[in-house]
Length: 141
Image 1 (cartoon, helix red, strand yellow):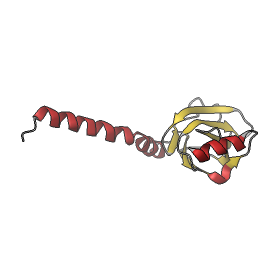
Image 2: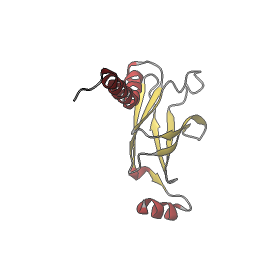
Image 3: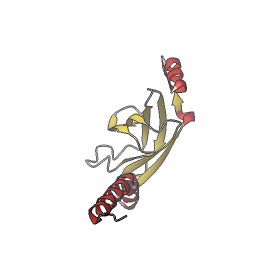
Image 4: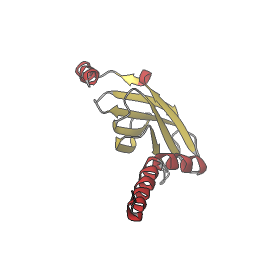
């Protein structure tokens, strides 16, 4: 049984591509930790790893940044204050809305420079109208 070199080369290209796709979030986290600009790394410790939307707001609710359709455990918001519009803000809120529409909120204090890690757990769940049916659907899926 002889394997053609083209097939081996093609297989190696696929393996490298898949491994580089999985490392993109890790690279973002590593880069954010090294830089002086303000960034936030959100560590998702909820039961649901598919996040429909992630919002970063000031503590009083002004939208800073938003990311949709996240499939990674860590969400990195690099250089979220590039225009220095929030340089006087210290308190921020992260809002995660999972695949089923359940909402998690966490208020935290961000550093003036560098990265801030925020751990969002299932205890940060915020009850909303209609969540009973969302939880039933989640249970059966």
